[in-house]
Each structure stands twice: as structure tokens, then as C-alpha cells.
View: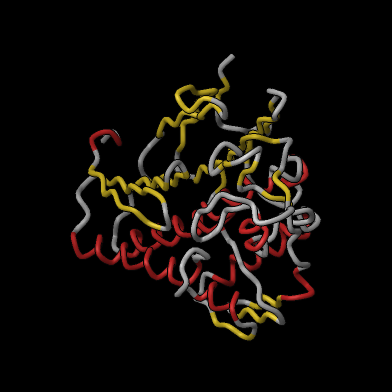
Length: 290
């Protein structure tokens, strides 16, 4: 059955729009369960909520137990922190707030760029337990949405749903849907595509400097070592087995060449640079338009 004929379950979660497509409508109890899972994730990890566990960690240092998903998330961030030389870090929250991407969405810088604290100096992340020696504001946005995609996929599988497409505002995971055609958005013109991917059985995630951009050249992809927005890459796409890994690597490509990341990760990728050039892996599944 073509995905176009499937049933859609749209909802809002973690500040963005979602849609889960399945051959048959999802039962209402399962829909309610999925929404509850999204709410619990937000209550744990959001830096935009005063009642979240992340907000509590930012107010008061100490030892905090997080849910099970914290273990693979921390391991992935730790690895990427090393691979990128500290440029990609979950401790980037205060740096984003300094430039105006704060809980109130003021979009007004409060001062010069603020480098993120060195991970090893303030935070121990051991499995599901985070211990901070000083208040730290986590921001897991580089991998969090992908992680939630994977968590919802696990809920669908546990409920016996083996064919679905999860669309988290353009970050996609397809299972049992056959090839799904996905346009690659032009980084400077959302109405135009620069290419096409036929997605099947994998996760596709993207990151772009034109998303969540404000002010004079300010956007959400910051280098943790400087606190400043990255100026070279403007858009990235990645395909991997899990959405968490694909999501994280879409951000990592702003700091490290894809070929270098392939020494550590099994994924395919495309990076578009500010001068209009592009680089991509030999096995990248997409087609770029001339």
C-alpha cells in the first residue's frame, strides 16, 4: 500500500510538529500512550520548561537520575565531544541562551558569545546518572529529536505495528513502508529542492543554519569551544539505522568532515557549504539535481 494512502496521526511535541503514518488508523489508547511518552520525554529533557529535570540541574548542582534513554544518549554525546574536539557538546545550553535562544525565545543576545564549559570540569555522565559540580544547562537538541523518534518507534513495535513512517518535522524514520520519496530542501529557498532521497528502512535527519536563525547571522548550531555559530556548512543530511545517530551526525557534520566521522560511524551523508559547494559520501542514497 502506498504511503500516500496511509492514515496519519498528527500532533505537537517538544516544540514542533509530528506525524506518524501507518497502513491503518492507530487505536486511540495507543495514540494516548504515544502522547504521554512525548510528554514524559519533554518533562525530563526540555531546557525550555521550568519544571523539567534539565531545568532542575541548571538551578542546583548534584546527582540526578534520568530515564533509561540517558545511557545511549550520553555515550553518543561523549564520543562526538571527543571526535569534534569539544565543538559538539550537550553543555551548549547557556551559550544558546546568551545569544537569545532562551526559554522566552527573546532572540536578543545578552552579551558576547559564551563558550560551553569543559565537560570533564563540571559534569560526570555515567549511564543514566548525571552528576554536576556546578549548575549546567544541558541542551540535547542535536540528538534529542532523533532519540524521541526512536523511542516512539519502539512503542509502535511493542504494540505490534511493524509498518510506519515517523516524521518529526523533516527528521524521518521509515519501517516497512517501501521506498519513501523525500525532497532535500534548498538551504536558502524552502520552496525549492536540491535533490531527492528514496528512504527505505532507515532514518533520515537534516540540520540547517537557516532553521532557528535570528539576528545578524545567528543560528542554533554553535561551536562549543567558542560559543559562536558555525559559518562554513549551511545544511547537512544523514542516513543511519537509528534516528538518534542520524540526528546527532547531522549536527556533527558542521564541525567535522563526513569522511572523518565515517571512521567511527556507519552512515551516509551530504553537506552543503556556504560557498554553494557540496560534499557527500560515495554510498549516499540521494540524487542531487544539477
